[in-house]
Image (cartoon, rainbow, N blue to C red; front, side, top):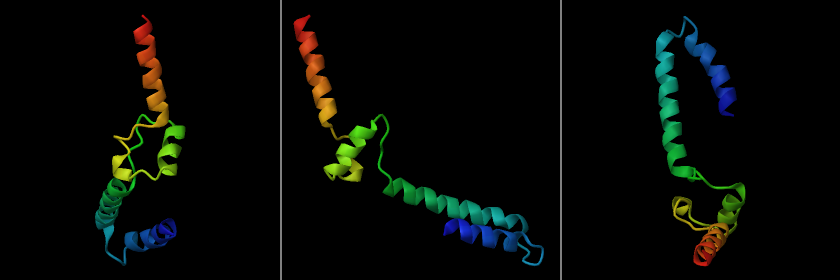
Length: 89
């Protein structure tokens, strides 16, 4: 929907009769800034997570703001194996 709106509105704004000219850039900068703010609050942080870990967090309905601090079952098992290997050496 947004693409259709932009593809319809952009030629009208750039058109000489509309007299937007380079002000069209301000329109796109404003909509881009709004999109970044919305994305910042809606999208969860999934850096350094495997797709399986992300699926686990969505399955367990973990709050999106707690994704970065949540310890998955895979991480717990890896920590247990790591500790076990260190105890044996």
